[in-house]
Amino acid sequence: MKKNILFCFSILLFTLNSCVQYQEVQYKGIQNAKVLKMEDGEITLSMDVVINNPNSYDIKIRPSKFQLVSSDKEIGTVHLEKSLKLQKNTEQAYSVIVKGDLKDASKNGLATLIGWALKKQIEFRIIGKLKVSAKGILKSFPVDEMRSFKPSELGIGNFNGF
Image 1 (cartoon, rainbow, N blue to C red):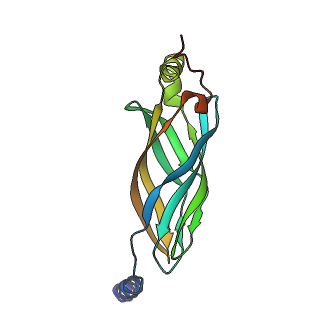
Image 2 (tube, rainbow, N blue to C red):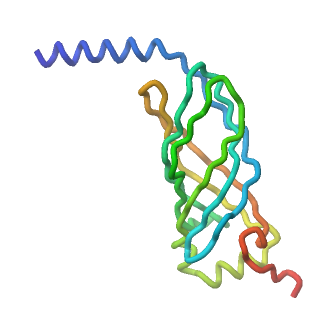
Image 3 (tube, one colour):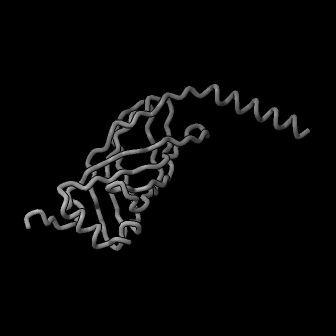
């Protein structure tokens, strides 16, 4: 009896999967990235992510967790905390807020901040898996994105003039 139920469930899943024609969602880039807050070992970033969803159905981006890297050193984790709905058949910019903890950077606290302040640009890299769902099917995509910020954008004094 259990084998029959499992077999019927497998046939149903296969049938539903074959009905959904999925086209790859295309990441086009980030616009208007800025640091909203950086204090007490935490960072809050705001950005507009441009995405093309060529599918004839909406796709939901689920809360996801990523590693934050600067100067080839892991400095903490960032979280996309709220779900985001990608409209069907559109390419548009979606505003997102990403929050993170920089506890690994705060281990070297002052040295890290001074190192960042002496640079003209600070590069941050976000690495992880983005979780998405559509029509009841879950999937994850690799993310490896790098952005540069001026120290002043992070609220860090620039000592290059000394």
